[in-house]
Amino acid sequence: MHTRIEFISRLVGAVVLGTALALIGVQLAGMLNLDPLRYGIALGIGGGVLGVVLGFLFTPYVTVRPINAIRQSLSAMPLERLVSLLIGVFLGLIAAALFSIPLSQLPSPLREILPLASALGLCYLGAVLMMNRYRDLREFAGGLRLPRATEKAIEAEKKEDQHVILLDTSVIIDGRILDIARTGFIRHTLLVPNFVLKELQYIADSADSLRRNRGRRGLDILSMLQNESPVPVRITDMDAPQARDADSKLVLLARRLTCPIMTNDYNLNKVAELQGIAVLNINDLANAVKASFLPGEELSVTIIQEGKEYGQGVGYLDDGTMVVVEDGYRLMNRTQQVVVTKVLQTTAGRMIFAKP
Image (cartoon, rainbow, N blue to C red; front, side, top):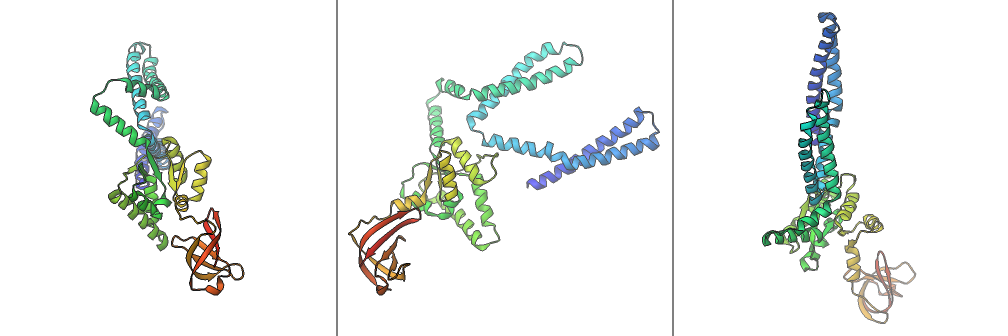
């Protein structure tokens, strides 16, 4: 879509700038008293060709791309800062209107230049001042007496914006977030930025069947979260255009909203923790709620394979915990009562050592 819009803007810019430079070339030949049939046509064609080339090459850089950058910045800007910006521009326009009256009485060319320059300068100054003092403006607006219904709506909106959890692509594809949400342990709103949703769509459209299935699973999980989970789920347009990849955008957005990130991505987990952002890792939660065993306790395990050391047998509990049984090789493919001798907790999970 953006590529098509840029191509159209290039064509329009080429036509407009080519026509303008062609007319300027013809006018220049007339101003220099040159032969209009010879030099006028030559300058007009030369100016037209130059205008077409320059317009086709550089039009998106002065039209479409700045507009897209401004749109993304405004969409990512918090509401209170956006309101402060608009108020600052409005006050700047009022001040510029007052200054334009005496400035218009000045001699030419000052009366043509200074009103426009003062309007731009005052609008910029008003926007900067109001955005720097938006917290004071919020406190002032909060001190005004509002109707009870309006006060309740504002409080609800503030509470909704403050108590959110950002979801990463990996945790949506993982799917366990749906089961956790159904239990009611999560009370905060789950916030899914649009760039995470686009990443899911990109994975779902992949040519690789494995990636395509993972992406479609993520979209299905997100749909079930919205329709079946008691936890509210919101899709937001908030973005961090200064970052390129989705992980960096999530970190910047979490810092701006002062909210945690829920993820299973090890690298994102470490980067967020280094920047002081709270991380909710479902793998850590799964390890924390696994059944704990103390040395001396008995448990039943089916030995299914040989261990790394001589004579060891290996089995697994229902939750996937590995149990290494001494002298368990002779008990292969049998269910055996064993006694726990040691429990080892690692970042990869929990490992239990036992003996028959």
